[in-house]
Length: 107
Ligand SMILES: [Zn+2]
Image 1 (spheres, rainbow, N blue to C red):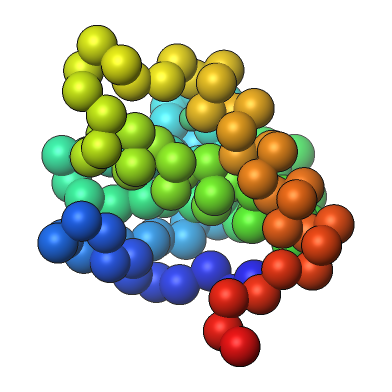
Image 2: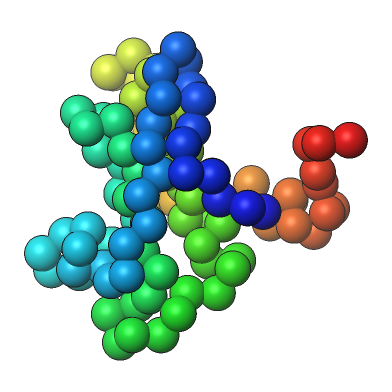
């Protein structure tokens, strides 16, 4: 999957920004991706805190994870929003099914 630089979602455009290191996302460097609803952007890192490049699979799964945060934010009422752990399980499951079945949406 080619990760786009912009994402159209629910009548808005969300920037997808790729940074080098997790510390450019959060000060403690604990995240490899983040959705910022206020700034309308998804930020993804290219490397781990130990400077290793993320694998394409990890990058794609992280992108899907942040997209699920976008959907969670736009489509679900505050009281029905998914928790971080649920988003994480959903993105891992979605990525596994897409990958295991070699699903493509451009045919
Ligand atoms: Zn998350």
